[in-house]
Image 1 (cartoon, rainbow, N blue to C red):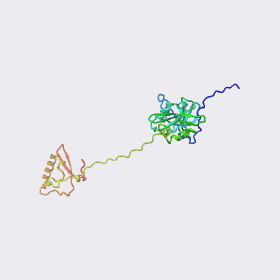
Image 2 (image 1 turned 90 degrees about the vertical axis):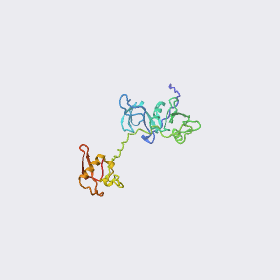
Image 3 (image 1 turned 30 degrees about the vertical axis):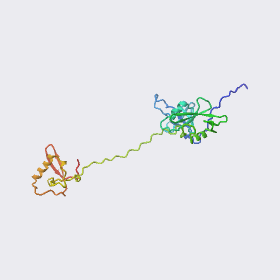
Image 4 (image 1 turned 120 degrees about the vertical axis):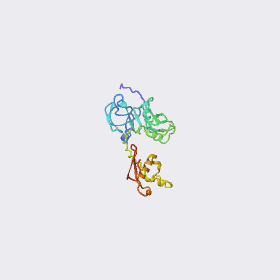
Length: 276
């Protein structure tokens, strides 16, 4: 046979689909699509999509956060397995996703190495995004530090999720766990009840101890009335001819309406409070 075989490094093994289903296996949107320069985006960077069908270079998918269904080209998404293993994602895009708003310290992803074929990289959100190469032994075991090897990537993730063991921090949640959900309707604020401020005529301070209190037949603080108004009240009382008797303080008090244009006063019965 004339066919010659060339030895090439083994590509990263693709893990089987996760038994958890769409919550852990999805498409991650790497950039807004379509571009905002063209039209309002249907899918936005960081959204998680569930695959409906593979159309050969295009995916038909539905957003797990908005429910919108559309097509998106393969170059705008990365395939994600187990919630943290990203396929088709470079270093720069990894940093963009890990720096999205609401991403927690310790959020992480594992992706294929750009510089060394057959290896993986662990990218972790800390004060800045840190990248660690994951080496692969001939027996397909993995390690970040040679002193500690793991039979599979799941074991590696589980270990560093319990203890940092030399990493910048403990792994907390897979990248994009905090997906952009549809905004919840804001509950209406409770109606504000405004109470009308009233002036209680009965609570007006009386000059009970004033020896001249008898000269104040309304039994109210004279400071509430202008000097001219008090003179008008006195004139009216003198015309009634009731000079010898004083007002019964137990009678219902009366309200006063004054028209400044004609210096004329009139009395009428009213409710027992003074409304300014």
